[in-house]
Amino acid sequence: MKKQIKILMDDREPKTIELKNNICNLDIVLIRKRLEVGDYIYPKLSICIERKEINDFCCSIMDNRIETQIEKMKNNYENNFIIIVGDVMKRTSEIDENCIWGKITSLIIKHNIKVIQCENDFQFLYLIKSIINKYQKEKQNEN
Amino acid sequence: MKKQIKILMDDREPKTIELKNNICNLDIVLIRKRLEVGDYIYPKLSICIERKEINDFCCSIMDNRIETQIEKMKNNYENNFIIIVGDVMKRTSEIDENCIWGKITSLIIKHNIKVIQCENDFQFLYLIKSIINKYQKEKQNEN
Image 1 (cartoon, rainbow over the protein chains, first blue to last red):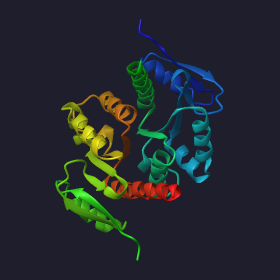
Image 2 (cartoon, rainbow over the protein chains, first blue to last red):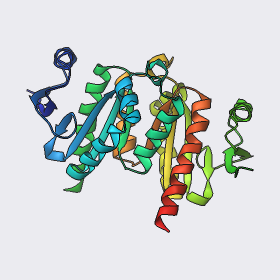
Image 3 (cartoon, rainbow over the protein chains, first blue to last red):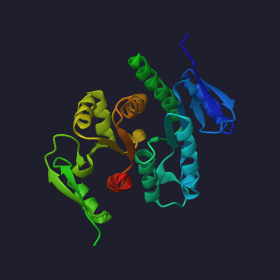
Image 4 (cartoon, helix red, strand yellow):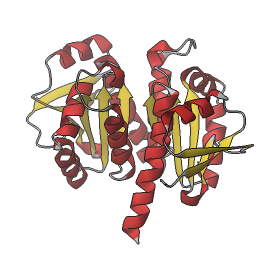
C-alpha cells in the first residue's frame, strides 16, 4: 500500500475539493479543520498553502487582505505557497491586469512567497502532492 | 523624462518582442546581444530571465535542456527567473501534464528558480519591468 499524505485543510474550503481528490487517486488524505493560517497545511515539513481562485485573489489584492494573510503565513510556517487557480484573463473582477502581475512579483520578490498558477482543482491537488514530495526529497538529501 | 530600463536581450529572441515593446510604452530599452546564459539580463541587479514559450518549455523538459540552462543561470546570476509564456492546457507538445507541474515545483523548490506563468508577450514585458522595479526597491530599502 502506498503511503498516504495527510494534509490539514481549512473547513471553509469547498466540499468539491474532496470529491475531486477522490477522483484523482493521489493518496492524499484531507483532514478538515478550522485553520487560522493558510488553507492547506503539511505540518511535518512546515508547508502552508493558500489556495486562491482567481477572482478571490483579485479581491484580496483590492481590499489588501492578501497582505495580512501572507504576514500570518510568514510568521507561522517556513515554506509558504499561494496557488492561484484560474486564468488571469478570465477573471470577472474589475482589477487592472497589471495590478495582478505587480502583486505576483511583489509576493515572490518582496515576501519570498512561492506563487504557482494553475487552471483547475485537479491540477491544484497534483501540485500539493508534488510540493510535498519535493520537500521530502530535499530532507532526505540533507540526512 | 522617465528613466529608461536598459535590458540585454539574446539576439535569437523573436523580432516581434521589440515591436511589442514599442507598443507597450514601458520605458524598456532592449539591447540585442548574443547571450551565453538566459534570454534577458539586467546586470546591475544580477537578474537573469529565461523566456519560455509553453511548447519550448515542454521540449526543454523532455530533452533535459532545462537542467543545463538553469545550472548556467545559477552559476552566473543571483536572481533567476523562468517566465513561461502560454497556457499549459494549450500546449501542442505531447508531454504528460503532470510532468510540467512536477518540473515547475522542482524548479521552485529544488533549484530556487522563480517561475512565473503568463499568457502573452505584453504580459511578459510588463513582468520584466515589474521584477526589476521590485529589486530596485529592495535595494533602496537596504541602503
